[in-house]
Image (cartoon, rainbow, N blue to C red; front, top):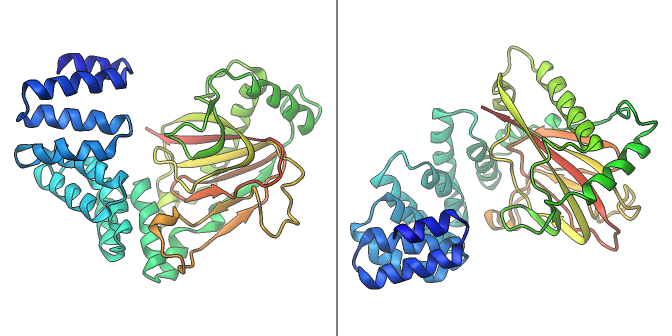
Amino acid sequence: MGHARVASRLGQADNAVELASHAVTMRPRSPHILTLYGSMLLSVGRAQEAVYPLEQALPAGDAACAYHLGSARFELEQYDAAAAAYRLALERDPEHVLAAHNLMPALLGTRQYAEALKVADTHLAARPWNVAALAFKSTALAELGETARERDLVDLALVACETSAPPLGYESIGEFNAALIEAILREPSLTYQPSQHATRGGWHSGDLSTSEAPPIRALNELAIAAARRRMDAVPRDTAHPFLKARPLRWRFHSWAVVMEDGGFQVPHLHAAGWLSGVYYVEVPDAISVADPAQAGWLSFGRSEPRWHRPETRTVARHICPTPGLLVTFPSFFWHGTNPTKDCARRISFAFDIQPF
C-alpha cells in the first residue's frame, strides 16, 4: 500500500487506484487496505465502486472507513445512508471534523431540518465562527419556517456595494478594466470548469494574491482596502456572528472567473473566509437591470436546490453586475449567479479575507 500512497501524493490518482486494487487481491480481508482502496476510488469519482470495499471493511474499520462510506453514499445522493455512516464515524471518533461537518448537509438531504439545526447549533456552541454551520443553519431555519431567525442570521444589509475610483496610474475605471482583461486572459492557471469549484461553463484561475501583473496587483490592493474599511466599521458592541468574528490576523486570497455564454456559479459559500467579495471587470450589455429574468445577476440567500423543498421561500437579494462594481459580504452567505443567456464573455475577480 505504500506505493499506492506515494502515487496518490504525486497526483497519479489512476495509478494509485490500480496499486490499491492489487493490494486488495493480496490481503482481501484487511480493513485498512479496503478502506484505502475505497477512498482512492472516491478520489477519482468512482463512488459506486467505492461502496463495496468500504462496506466490507466497516465492521472492523475505523472512523475513516465510516467517513469515506458516508462520502460515497453522499456522492450517490443516498443521504439517509450517508447520515448513518457519518454518525458511525463520530461514534468511533467524536473529533472527526469532516464527518461532523458533512452530517449537516446529509441531514438536509433527508429533510431532517430540525436535526440539522441541532447539529449546526452544537458546532456553533463550540466555535461561533463556523462558516459551514452558519450556512447550513440558515437553510434549516428557512425550511422550518423560522423566518425572523433566518433574517437575523442572513442579514442582507451586510452585503455592501461600492464603485471605487481607478487606482493610481489609470485615468478611468474603463482603462483599468481593459488592463485587467488583458492580464486575466493571459493568466496560465485558468482552468475550464474545475470540479472543486462552483463555476459551470467558465474558466477559473488559481490564486492571484501574489500576482506580479500590475493591474492584478492594483486590484488586490483595492480589494484589501475595501476589506479594511469593513473591518474598521465593525461596532464594538454587536451580537451578529459575522461582526463578532472580525479577524485580528488574516490572509488574503484572490482569483478570477471568466464566464462564457450560459455559464453560472452554483450556490456556494467560502468555508475558509470571514469576508468575501467580487469585483466585476467585464460585463456584457445583455446583463441588464432591465432584464426581468435577471440573467447573469449575483444572488444571495438560497442554498443548493437539493437542500430545499421547491416551495420554500428564503431571504434573498439580487444584484445586477456592472463594470467596476465591488461587492463584499460575509463568507457564510449562500451566493451564486443566474445563468447568462445570449451573452458575450463576463469576467469577475473574487477574493476572501481568511482568518488565521
